[in-house]
Image (cartoon, rainbow, N blue to C red):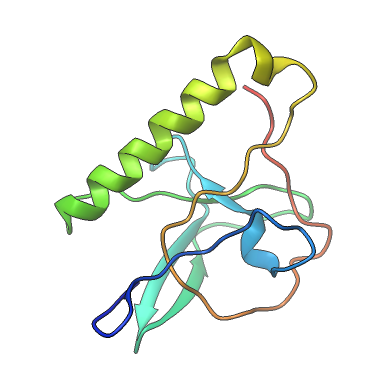
Length: 121
C-alpha cells in the first residue's frame, strides 16, 4: 500500500516471533492457482476467498500488474528472485519453505488455524 506521508509499506515476515497470519500468504504461480484476492479499502487490506480453503492449504494471491506497472515490475523481480533461490542447489538442501512475498501493508487478522507452508516445487 502506498501512503503519501510514509511511502510504500509492506509486510516483513522474516521474524517468526513478530507477525500475524499474513506471513502464510504466498504468491501463486498463476491466476488459476490463486485462492485469495486482496482488496484495499480505506488504506486497509482485506482478503476475499475465491474458493474453499482447507485447513493446512496454502494461501495464495496473484497480481497480474495491469493496474500499476511499477508494482508489477517490483513483484516480477521478487518472483524471479524466489524462483532463482528455489532452483539453486543450496536452496534445495533442507529448505522446504520460502518466505512470503507480499508487497502490501495489512492489519493483523485472525489466525488461519494451522497455517500453511510453501512446498518445494
